[in-house]
Length: 208
Image 1 (cartoon, helix red, strand yellow):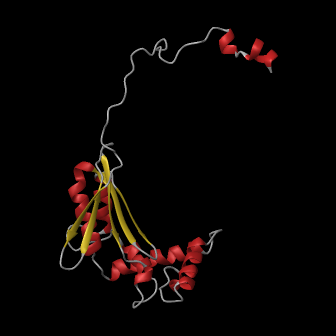
Image 2: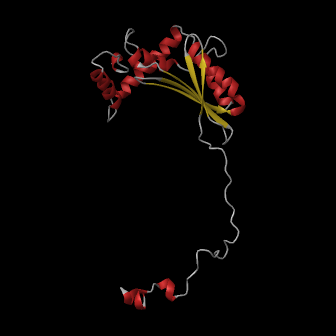
Image 3: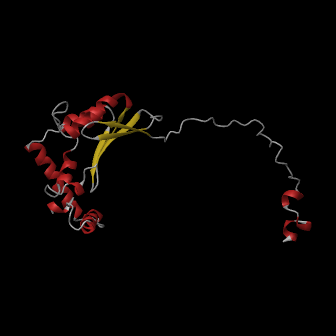
């Protein structure tokens, strides 16, 4: 090893003269600029809005990047909470989301046009524990986006046409489930039934 690195165990750096002390600035790095302390962009603020009926937890984070923002409402309403109503209702609710409302959006087409005009996308996801209504939209259309969220949750237009469309979408989901290589959604349904000893509703299997 000494023959490889030099006589008497000296390293290559010692033999070639690279013996810069740590207190001496390296060439080209005499003046360094360090980042200043800025607010944490991932810091989340929580506020609780209380009423006689229930408490609403509001989580917000400063929008520091780009012209878009994401807003969402999470409800503690999933298949596990629908014991006294028919199976699969949460699946049906998911497919009816962001459709016609009783106030501002009279059809799903109007919702689609509004999203296209403001570069927005929307989605609703439901499982055994919760239902999430989410919307990504331009920041200057935030007020209208919140209005769309509120109306699709609390003021949906439930009629024979919207129910028929939602049932058709549910039926399509169930047909495609049979062709998935890993049928994880059905496995999750069965696992929840086993865990809660059949005291919860099915999410998918009720329409199969």
